[in-house]
Length: 360
Image (cartoon, rainbow, N blue to C red):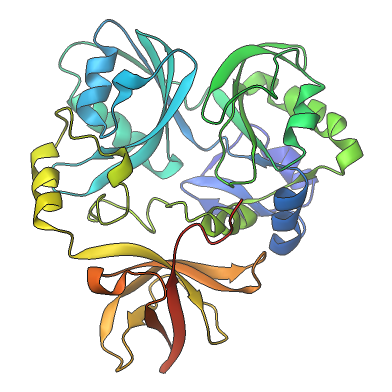
């Protein structure tokens, strides 16, 4: 198992460490519920240095990104971030990722920890134009400072105007006395905030500076447990749960980042799928009966016939009820449609709802 650069810091803070995506990661420091509310209502810090980062450079860099990703990276401008995914040749998803544009010939791809090697090999196998690629994953540390007080906390540490930064943009600047920090107005919580990329040797200095700056807000470290409930309340997909090598990106609701205005891997097949009409759809649902839906529980109709499976589920700390994502036939995908979650041998009533579960 690999460890993140700040592993000892998390151990000293009393974090519960669990194996995740090949890394030993802090899952919680206090309680998932407490950490969840800290981020929704205040400010918390996640160490997500297990994520992967690839530098892609050269005159053909954009061509390679356009070929392997479904979204249209040609619309990016310097300092813009784009959500996208890598389609495979069989109608599934290699991974979802973020694309950062520094300039016309330099990009950063941020991928999921569990897929670093797979994504690298996949992109390289399509790199026929000799684009310069570098795997920076072991050199970078990524801290996600999330919540309504994230901006006020971080603004103390930099002269970069964070307030004026739009969602899904980034700047490279000085923060906490450290040069060349990537300050990105992104996150996986829907609570607002920034993701901060630094060299691993600067990780502890940045961590300490952030906690010092956030003292007045009672800033707290937050683990992967709360990260999962936060992302689920916003209906964000998690690779390995809601999307994978076999799930259709269109059925998963990723049509909005699938741009048929260009050619990309498997674009013709996906276009055909869209034209033929989707058989299934990833939907959000809320429990009506008491109960917590869990991944792999069956979703059924009133007679108990299986419709599909729960892909992600939890008790929502904000809504105080069970929520989940799962695939159902398109006929059952309309909001307010009644579905049932099979828990042991009981059918618990739920209803399809429009995402996100938690608005605002």
